[in-house]
Amino acid sequence: MKSPNIGVFDSGFGGLTVLNALLRHIPHASYTFLGDTARLPYGSKSRRTIAHYAAEAAQFLVNQQGAEYLVIACNTASALALDAIQEAVPVPVLGVVEPGAIAAKSASTTGDVLVIATAATVQSHAYAIACRAQGLRALEKACPLLVPLVEEGWTTHPVTAQVIDVYLSELRAEAQAEGLKYDTLVLGCTHYPLIRPLLEQAVTTGVRVIDSAEATAETAAHLFGQNNPQAETAQPNPARIRCFATDSTDKFERLGSRFLGRPTGKVELVDLGG
Amino acid sequence: MKSPNIGVFDSGFGGLTVLNALLRHIPHASYTFLGDTARLPYGSKSRRTIAHYAAEAAQFLVNQQGAEYLVIACNTASALALDAIQEAVPVPVLGVVEPGAIAAKSASTTGDVLVIATAATVQSHAYAIACRAQGLRALEKACPLLVPLVEEGWTTHPVTAQVIDVYLSELRAEAQAEGLKYDTLVLGCTHYPLIRPLLEQAVTTGVRVIDSAEATAETAAHLFGQNNPQAETAQPNPARIRCFATDSTDKFERLGSRFLGRPTGKVELVDLGG
Image 1 (cartoon, rainbow over the protein chains, first blue to last red):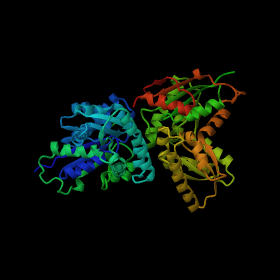
Image 2 (cartoon, helix red, strand yellow):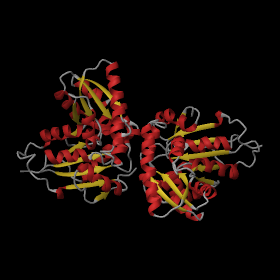
Image 3 (cartoon, rainbow over the protein chains, first blue to last red):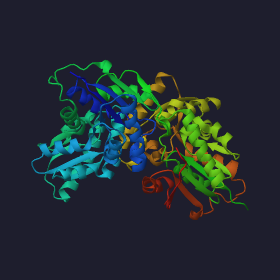
């Protein structure tokens, strides 16, 4: 049985939550993760620049690391550069946005969903567009403080619970004003799985929380993982995860293990130029 | 009387608080502000990369915009690239770190000071080194949540007050453990002037708050502004402020006016390469 070689790309290390989910769903695969930390955040850059950076990263994973499949574990790159990446490499490419929207479609009975994400992802309206393609109405809300709170390690801190309450209260008021009968909340940022317990506590009873990272790993298991009947039970081989970053690996190594759910190991520095 | 042409440089738009202070201290000058927003944050990049970016920015301000003086309104660039900038351009260059340390020296009677800043600035120990050169002992504390809270506009929000309390409590405990008799708190980040009222409320009675942005403008007035006897009373000419950014000017225009204390006007896009 062939073990697939899966490349996972993010602008930073938040996408390690997607790798975490992939390891659970396709445990027999080999993984190469690349965080383009030298050039983050992608969110403030133009579509052309992001497409250029993401294509370079994809080519590194495929041409130099032998990836046979790519998961774009970055909402901004998924939203703005998926086409450019697909053109740049000859392997199947999966982003995080569409799987999140498909999972929301399965979860929602009312057809109205809420999405929380970074300012850049919301500004792209990638989730609203992907949800509309699934026949859903989506209301998106930028929550810029949640990423820094997660990176500060305040994943169970009362301040984080308060910030979540502020954002969700505003979102509920907006949803009410627009007449949305929502029953699903989509986590449209790779950092949010770390505060999923606080978010589950904060949502109204009956609202289902959908995690894009988890949804993406499930989709990847269907698309790339067909040869593995014992997924979910097999133990991943930690030696089969290699992590690369384009600058300053110390923050990556320090925080990454929390996102990955296990040590990242030594993060290797790679120069993509720029 | 000649009106000086002063270039002000930051990796983002936080340095507009320094320009705000400069406008009060040298109101008759012309100003050209450059935010290298395409390549921020500098804090996660190597010294070599930061020196390269900052030198390019300085050359743009001097060679293309005719700046006769430069203020580096960026703690990271001041800490890591002041020498490189001074070598790159033939005009006087002033950073924000040394003026902050000199102002702390004037304020402190015990000789022990606390410094709060971003993680990158603290990691560089630029303030500790500059304070030591002034005969002060400094204890530095990274406060990574304060910049996102300011950028979210929560400058008077109870959550921000709580976050400040958490950070200052930790800092007080560390100071006590090290036996520091501090009487001064230095704000070592250009975003912090916007939450100065909350910080003033949070410090122990008798502790003086020193703002690096203000201290830098005072020093600049001494060094560059000698020809202007009516500083502080003269009205600045808003037409004499030009703002440039290297990418996506919308966040700059939206948030910048809060930092500058007046509208930034149209922000012009400039391509420095990279």
